[in-house]
Image (cartoon, rainbow, N blue to C red; front, side):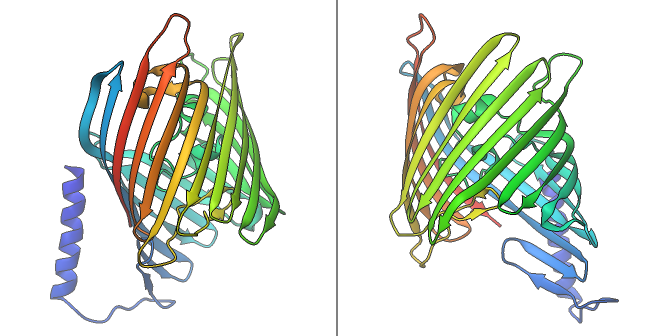
Length: 353
């Protein structure tokens, strides 16, 4: 219903503009309209940008040779509104408008950026700074789905306050948040992350990161990040260690990729971005990933368990907005007495606007 309302409003606006064509004026600075990366309208210190993503997936998953999933559905359908409301103040409101989500808010926050690149204060619902793969947008990650290791340890989005920025060559974030995984009455947590590039020359780059979270329910999580671009080749790895009530868990993943058409993964503000093709024929990418340890291996039907898994895949970036991807994942449980084996084949058509 909400999607219908939004579509109706947009249609009405288009009809209105067509019916009453004329001059567009402002009472101050010139009005600027951009369509690259969504629709953006700005005038002086004020701006509004509208955009989003659609991800249509087909996935077939099996547990011990028995089909558990065989679906064609919307993996993500998000619509966002963001912009500046005055000098130094900005906002973002992003909603999931996909199947059975009812307009669930993904991001809903206000930011103050009057200190420049050195610090931005954000209040509201947004991602907690823990994990390189988690902080890389779902539209930009190399694999179609994040690793089970990442899914098992990160906080994700939460209501809270954060201070983030860049000082010299160091990216940092400090977070105070309500832990969405809390089961006790005390659900408050703190997290911090630092990342930097110790070496960068031409299209070669090395990334190092460290994150720590003191979470609800007497739980602590530590993450280590290592990644590099070497021209069209890339590697990325993370290790997580988690302690709660005397129980220790850990896991890691290692991912390697090759962009066959020669492009390099973009890097900005401590995370990697989506590959941008250099030609009209698009960009092709091959990658492989291995995972080892305790995590949320639900994509291959094993659930939250200690497991060994691998993923191989190919991406075709038709242009800066359209991506086709195919992944095959397989793994086995390492739990004592378990012989469970799971696998998944996933296809995706992604459009960003």
